[in-house]
Length: 413
Image 1 (cartoon, rainbow, N blue to C red):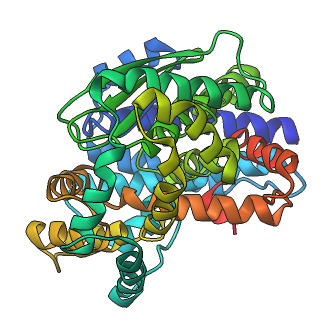
Image 2: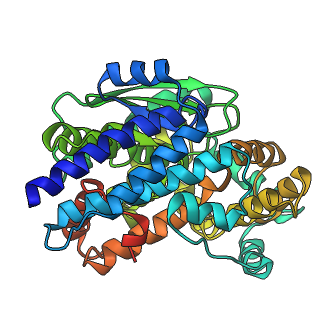
Image 3: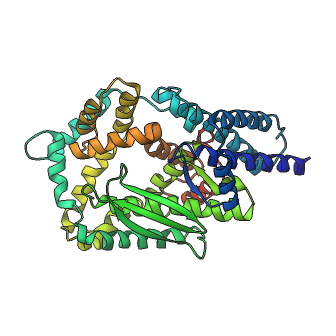
C-alpha cells in the first residue's frame, strides 16, 4: 500500500518537474535552478507545450495527487504530498498570469506563495520614522539625514571583495559547526551591474553556486554579513545544497532538482535565508565580529559600530514599507513615481534605490513578501519549537530540519 503510494507520488513528481521546466520556456525568471537530468530539459524544449496544455496537464495532475489517500503514511511522505499539491496549485496560477489573468497583490501572494500578507497603515511607518527623527542629527528630511549618516559606512569598491570574503569565511565557519555540508560545496562571487536586485544566488547543482553582487548603488557595511549569510551560509547556498544532496540524490525526489521561483518554496527559501543571518551571528556577536574584522577591512571607525547598528535596528522595523509600496503599485493605486516617493519616505531609500526597487516590482511583483513575511514566519515557527535566542543549539537544529524538508508556508503556523 505504502509502496504504491510512494510510486504514485514519484510519478506525479516527474510530471511536476516537466511542467515547471515547460513554464520556464515562457517565463525566463520562473526556473531559478535546475540540476536534474539534462535530457529532460532538452525534451521539454523540443516539445514546447502550449500554456493551455501546461495548465490542463497541471490541473489533471493535481487532481490525481489530491485523490491519493495519505492517511497513515509517515510524516515525510505526507509533507511531500502536501508540497507537490501546493507547488502545482501555484504553477497553475502562474500560468494563468502568463495567459493574462490579473490578480491583486494579496490574491497573487495567496495563489503563488501560500500566504496572506499583512496590511499596515501609513501611521505604522510614520511612528517608526518619528523615532528615527529623534536619533538622527542634522538638517533635512529623515531620509536625507539617514542617507547622510550612512555615508561613512559605504564599503569602498576596492575593498568590497576583501570585506565580503571575510564575512563569508566567518559565516561558513559558524554554519559548519552545526550543519554537515557537502564535501565539494563551493561558490564563486561575481560583481555585476544593471540588475533589479542587490544580490542573487544561482545554484548550479552538485554543491556549487554562482553568487552575484550588484554594485550599481553604494553597498553599506551591514550588507556584507547580510549577503554572506543570506546568499551563502546558512542561506540559499546551504539550502540548495542540502535539497540537492538529501532530497534529490539521497531520497531520489526529482522535484528537488528544480526550483520554481514564483512558488511557495520561495517563502521558505527567502525566509530561512533572512532568518539565517540572525542564526549565524546573533545579537551582539555580529557587532563584535564586524568591529573586530569588517570595519577595519573597510577602513571604518570601529567606535561608531554600536551607533550604526542602533540606527539599523530601527530601520529594520520599516521592512513592510516595501510591501505596501508593492501593493499600491501592483494594484494600480500608486504610479511608479508615487511608489518611489513612498519608498523614499517610509523605506528611507535614496531616490535611485527607490527607482531600482520599482523595477524589482515590475519583474518579481509580490515576491517581496517572501523576505520579511518569510523571515517572520520562519522565526516564529522555529521559536515555537524551542529554538529561542537563549537556546542556540536548538535553534540550529530546527533550522536544519526546516531547510532539509519539503515544508510549506501554511505549515509554519
